[in-house]
Image (cartoon, rainbow, N blue to C red; front, side, top):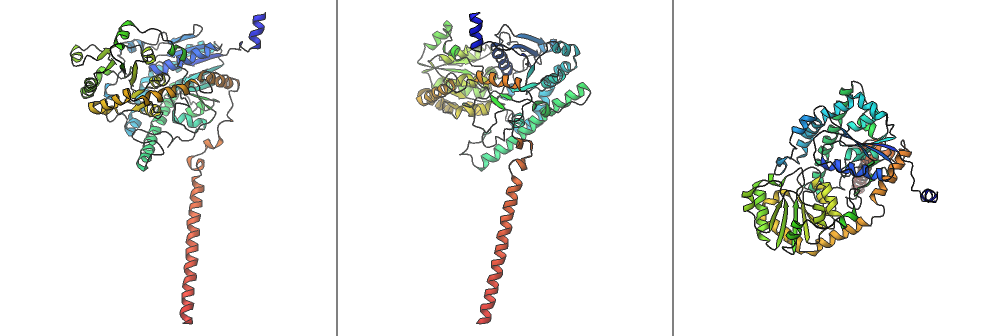
Length: 531
């Protein structure tokens, strides 16, 4: 009785809610993020079902969910055998294609390609009446769904559940705006632009141009999914905007102490950092013996990894030549390179200070003081990890949101954003790496950011749970969304008023000039008559 009384006094006993988290199996980073989200929610006493419809046959997701009380509901579509036989796409063209980050082509091509990849599983989920009955029987209180894949919101609509939107990336503009966040134009630089206040006219023009087509791409992708749902269900369905903005909050994988400073509203909840376990990162345990021997070879070691979607072995030869030039020019530095394929001939081209590994214990290596720099593609998962490790980073973004992630981290001073096309320039790469290894300012700035993230006023996990439980309690609350966000751009920014005032001033100046001119003429005429 005493123990029960103490638990009640300290508020540890909670009234657990029944929560459905829709975790589409498509990309590893979003799956990892939502799995971690499920763990945190379950750790706080809620009943969690993790519904995982497979759009691709990811093979490295087992073990992502740690909490044993979570019910993992894997949904295998009828074409799952086909997915198993399909090799995971690695997109080697992303390495050196000048067209990948072209906003016009992305707006025209990307939405259709992505929706096509999602469509078959989505159609089955929305048509599967047995699935619907099975989920309804669990009497969920609320659903949580990823905004990248909108079928989750329509599934929640079928189940008559309030649905809380979440994004595993830093931001998705069209959804942020539904929750009152004004345009981030000028606050977040785009590829090829300098940051304010150094941004000139051409930088601002580039920002506007890229944002315009980015928005078209995002709107088109959302509308294609909306149309697909309506076609599948053979009846009118609510527009995707109406479904999403019903939620009192929008959960974003952004961290305000890492991300660009952007005006926002209380409805957008920043939880970036929930995937990080600082205690575990500081106590990773001993390294495998083979890595311990490698780290003992030289005073400085550099870790190179470009993630799982982009593979190092598929890097263009001229990029590899630039890296080899750097390796040869820095014999005093050891390099550990995550290289996914055995290539004896390529290995022979490398100097002795380079070690190729198909897999690396990344968290343990980043925690080791002998690793001086991390060369990474700038995926959000790796960006968060290196930021929380206090380690300098050479960010080499390849595609997608990676360029903005790279600039986001670089602005804190402990990282450098490096153009992927400059990998072929071995001399520039050598200068950059030597500067980062030898100049203590990068380590100091990286440690400073770590201190900030470690001591931020509100822990991201606490921020998540407080807002989530509040949203479940008040599912229809929309008072924190500014009313002005529902009007068009002209009304929102008072452009009509500014134009009216401007034209009024011009007209007033014109009248004044006419009156002055008339008076001057009359005075001149009068003077001439007097003379």
